[in-house]
Amino acid sequence: MQYPDDDNGKMLQAMAESGIDLTKSLDVDFFLVFEDKRDAESALEDLVAREEEGELEINFNEELKKWELIVTLNMVPEYEAIVAREVALNEFASEYDGMTDGWGVMQHQEGDAEFADDDHECGDHCHH
Image 1 (cartoon, rainbow, N blue to C red):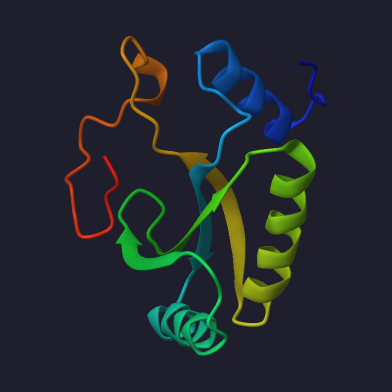
Image 2 (tube, rainbow, N blue to C red):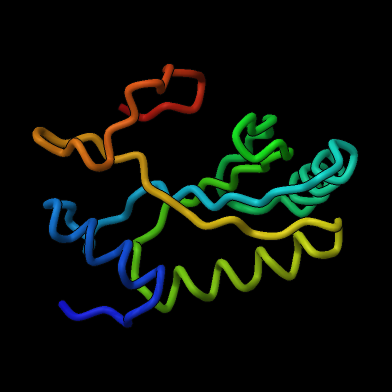
């Protein structure tokens, strides 16, 4: 399949080339970043109050030196759906002085070194 020549299209192309089946639902992690912990916590509380679908996690990203709210949605990773969700989440995050910072998929497959996460520790939300 051919994807648009932008970051989202390149990510989907790389995933497809690595053998990930993009026709099946996957847990897609959308990253929202905030300078201030209170802003991130307020955004998290708002998402919980709205009873949005998916899983939510908040942590401090040492590399970015920002608070990160991870919104995990189970969805088929289609280009248009990814873009639409990113736009909606960016608009939401901006209400709390935040912004989106991309998305990713935790997908471990044999020989899939490009998407491997050696530092990953299983928690309550793991599905593997």
